[in-house]
Structures are given as structure tokens and as C-alpha cells.
Length: 308
Length: 266
Image 1 (cartoon, chains in turn blue, orange):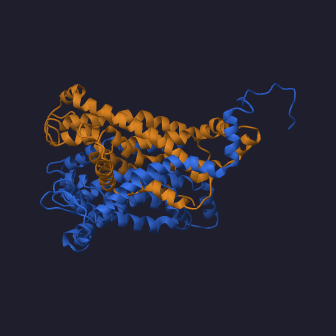
Image 2 (cartoon, chains in turn cyan, blue):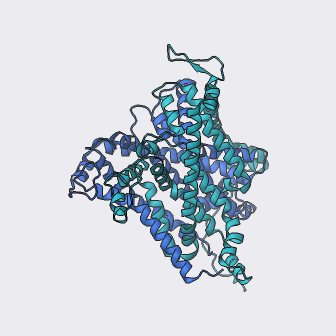
């Protein structure tokens, strides 16, 4: 196409070209020194994360090696591995660790199983308009307070609550308060955090690939298994990090709907608060830290950490 | 792959059922906010607007909402700046230790809140010897909010590539001008989405908050925790939850519109 050179130029942002101003000289200097540019970019955030977060974590881990004077209640800085040995060998800690791990894994699996068909419907079946409404519908419950939602489940599952009311005509019973209620409530709370990354992952799968697979004779299941699943695997893992780690540290939901059951978070909480034994609490906190690190290390290769 | 009619129907049915399940507890909250019963009896014995009137006169609740707004706005602002800086650094440069830094950003959200909470509490009080206040709370919240901004911005940067920025500097624009006129406008919706998530995360956070807020600082979740188990206050809490969900439609709607306007054909 010919371009008419005499046509009036379209309006555009005019970039001032001034030589020698400080900003200009700084800009030239920076563009010649990429290392400096990098350190200016990363300086503040790394200072923040390193100083605020990593230093605090490190200090906490060191505290695990100290002990509490049983008379004064003060932390005495004598080095000992007693706390860590107690956590590793105590049957209470072992039971609670296994229970917490079981709950976190179950919640994660339930959430993924529920999220997959919904995310697929949203990304590949629904019309763009319905898609937008569905995303809003998934996002909105996130804004109802976490506590209110946990409490709502307490009400739903209570004796004479709506659950009992709904299922009793069919001979069903409310599970009451306990581990099943905890698992239901946690799955409910973290479900949007699992749906959203999987939905985003599915959106990035081009429809043309699905059509190509169909044209080459791939059935629905083999297309899902061989084309879709490998592409959204990082997104699934990303979602699982949320549900897994949020469940692993939770102690409030289990207080509200879990009856007398304790999770790792409860043990940490009691030791920080009522028992005033920060070193033991820090030693217990090591357990979820190690589990999460193992989990992150295991999933790092999938590229999931880029999909959170 | 062609989805059969029945497969589409099945997917739609599953989606409808799960959405119903998602909204069932919220419906209970909504109905209970009008119920004359204080202890969650179902079905509700009677209808009253009393809790709604009480909620809007409750100074404690309104103060708590304001405190939460302040904390969430301040930590979102910090997270926006730090998250953008760190994603520019990690996406535009290749250097040793890059993976370690991206892990570092994820860590505050990946580790359980109670770990983050007691670590920061310990560091503030015994390490630095400062009183817990609204400031320590904002610092703590900003730390785990960085990741949401980071994820949104770095995903956008990865998709954008550098050709427009290269063109801008070839045409004589300096670093600042390029950022202001080329990079930033393309990041805007990612910043909005990331900021919205950071805001929501901070607004609803309770565990880290328990350990890092000064005793005089009452955010909304802390206030709710105080009042949830009081028979006279629980329905007021329900009212506030309903209002929050309704108000949240506005920012979510705008985020969706911005994202929808920019969406490339799939």
C-alpha cells in the first residue's frame, strides 16, 4: 500500500529530546551499565525480603535451638537440640504431623478434582460473556471474610443446620464437627485459589491444538491426557501450592469446625501463646517449613513456580 | 477434539452444582443477617432488619473497616513498587541466583501464615526491639503481598518481550521516557490485577495479623474474630460480610473489563 507522504501526521506522544539534562545523562549512564541498572532494580526489594523476611526466619530457626527457663519464663540462650528431638520423637507431634499432612493432601486433591472441570468449562466451553461472569462468580466469595465463611460452614454443618435439613429427607446426616468438617471447609476456602490458576493455564492452550488433535484422530480422553494435561500441569501444581500450604498452617478453621482435633498450627499457636515456649514453637514450625521446602523442591522442575 | 453435546452438558452441570455449593454458605450468611435467631437455627424463625441497623451504627466495626482499608492500601502500595522492581530485574536480566530470588518472593506466601507470623513477631520485638503497631503490620502484609504483583507483572513482561522498548530507545527515548510512555502503559492492567489481589489478601488476612499488629490496632478480621462467638454480635458480622461481598463486585468488574479489553483472540 502506498503511503501518502503529504497526509497530516497522526497525533502521537511527542518525546522531548533534550541533551545534557541530568535525567538524560543518568539515562545514558544507566543504559551503558546494565549491572548497575540491575542492582538499582533489585536493591530495594531484596533489602526488604532479605532483611525483613529471611533474617526473621533465620532468627526463628536459631530460637529453636534455645530453651525456656522454667522459673522465669525467659528464653535462655543455651544451645540445645532438645526441642527438635522432642518434636521428632514425641508421639503427639508425629500424630499431629501425619494428620495435618493428610488433611492438606486431601484438601488439595479434592480442590484439583473439582477445579478441573469448572476451569475447563470456563476456558473452553462457555461463551466470552459467560466466561467473564463465571470469573466474577468465582472471585466474589474471596471477599467474604475467611472467618465468616468458616463460621458459615459451622452453621451449615451444625445439628439442625441447613445441611442436615437438606439431606435428612434422604436419610443423610451432617458429619458434625471434626476432621471431615475441617476438610470440607478448607477445600471450600481454598477452591477459588485453585480454580483461577488452572483456568488461566487452560486459557493459554490454543483451541487450534485441540482441533489439530481431533483432526489427527485423537479422541476426547486422549486429547485431554496427551495434549491438555501436559500443558496445564504447571498451573495445576501452582494451584496446589496454595491449597496445600494454606491448609498446612491453618489453625483457625480447625478451631471453628474441627471439634477437638488439633493441627500443627494449633500446636505452634499454643506454644507461642498459652505455654509461652517460643523455642518449642519454633521447633514445631520447622516441620511445615521442611514439608513446604520439600514440596517446592519437588515441583520446581515443572515450572509451576512461574505460574502462581 | 470435539466435545459431544452431552459432555458439554455434563461440564455445565458440574459447574452449576459447584457454583451452587460455593454460594450455599454465603446464602446462609445472607439469610442469617435477617434472621431473628442469634444462634444459626435453620430455617430462620423470623425476619428482622435490626442487625443491619446495628451494623451501620457499630463504631467498632466501622473503625475496623477503616483500619483494614489503611493497612491494605499501604501494603498494596509497597507491594506494587517492590513487586514491579523485582519482576523487571528478574525478567530483563540473566544472572546467577535468579531462581533463588524468585523462590524468595514466593516464600512468604508458600510458608504457613503462622510461621511468617511468629518469625516477624520475634524479629520485631526481640530482634529490633520495636513496639508492634500499625506500621509493623503493614510491613508484614507487604511482605506476603509482593508475590501477587510479581506474578502478574512478570507474566506480562514475559509476554510483551522487549521489541517495543528497543524501538523506543532506538528512536532516542531515554530509560525514564521509555518506562513512562512504553513499558508502564502496557503493564497497567497487570498492575491493577496484581494490586487487587494484594489488597484482597491483606484485607482478609488474620493469622499473620494476629502476631504482628499492635494491641491497639483492630483490623476487620481481628474484630470479626472477637465478635464471631458473641451471640449478640454474630449476626452483625454476617451483615458486614454481605456488604463486603456486594461492594467487591465493583473492583472485580473493572478488573475484568480491563483484562477483557486487552485479551487477544484465543
